[in-house]
Image (cartoon, rainbow, N blue to C red):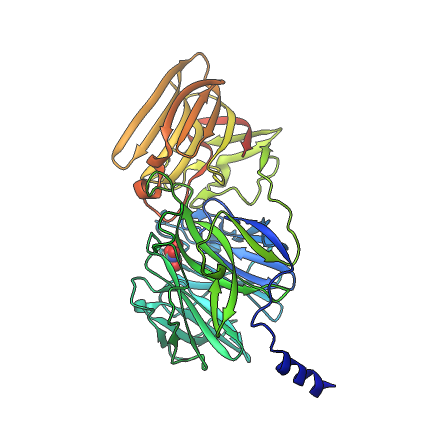
Length: 506
Ligand code: 6LW
């Protein structure tokens, strides 16, 4: 019987990779807003995905999905200061690209804290946490990844712009073999984001090149031995929008990807890209996209070689639920995993109860040197959305809503009380410019603050009336820098302020 099956398989020549049963319109990005450097692992029919977070705390959000289209955040991998030293970190430092893997009942997340100790990994049996304390690793370079085979744990990263492989002890982190250079890519700058996969007797080394801007791309090489020599794909890059065919797409910077095989045997890639407007500006950050992968002649083909789009027809096992825009009212009785702080929060400056969030300022704002602003920030996950709150200062001070990209680019819609005089203001910081866009006197140090976000501008409403507007371009990555994307939420710079709820409508 066994022999017969074997003969049949050879005779019928199975397709190199199966495709899903039904045609589906996939909506990209699968995780919108600031969600760079995605890595994914499939465990049976469950998929888990992580992103980088730079100077934010908690760090490395973890999402779960069963249909590849809808992803729910189930926690943050780094949710204790002991796992995440962030002193001096900013929107270009802190936590870089993470990799998530599963082996023998244990989840591993490996990443680089570029301003706080270098490469490390943490482990968990439940991906929702708790995750272990960090195990620090010796091999340098960013974007570490793991590959397990025959009881050996391999680590790859990119010291000196060369993808380098060593064996490590997955418990102690000790290096067990000298780093061996594998590949430096096709010659573009920044060979990084390496991952190793094995399929049909080939080891595949997937990397990114070109840098995370317009020239970003995925390239691949393969070898019969994990140590090489690696033969580059003659048709590299396997994904780029820096091409004649994709140069007019609003989706650019496609790169930094991770392959996975779904439960039904189909292959996919998650990768980052940004959505630009008005030339080449983007403010929501690098986002997480998904595309199908098929295999031809022993090489992967992403999305049939077509550019990726916000709506793509793909084949899946079953039709996923259509993603719904979020409409939320936060009463702050619990603080969900989507809320973040810049560096570590000072716990005593936050309290909540009876539907009111009370924030106490410590003098730190969002400029350089304001390392621990009292602020709760969540990703702006849709170019068009609305958010608002009612704020009341308990005495002199400054509090309101922040729209934050980096220390060099942020907007505050605030209420201020100084020597008994109350006012409202929209203020923007852009590098060395600090500009007050609109100011109004208030009879009390309280106001309803609403922001309507449009693709190209924010419109500010004070107590339900139009008050000011500012272009989103001013907070774009191109203007404000950093590796992040816009986050928004309540903050208090000085004094004490009560916030009655926070609306979020997409
Ligand atoms: C990340 C690197 C990259 O570690 O940018 O786009 C760096 N790719 O792989 C920061 O996100």
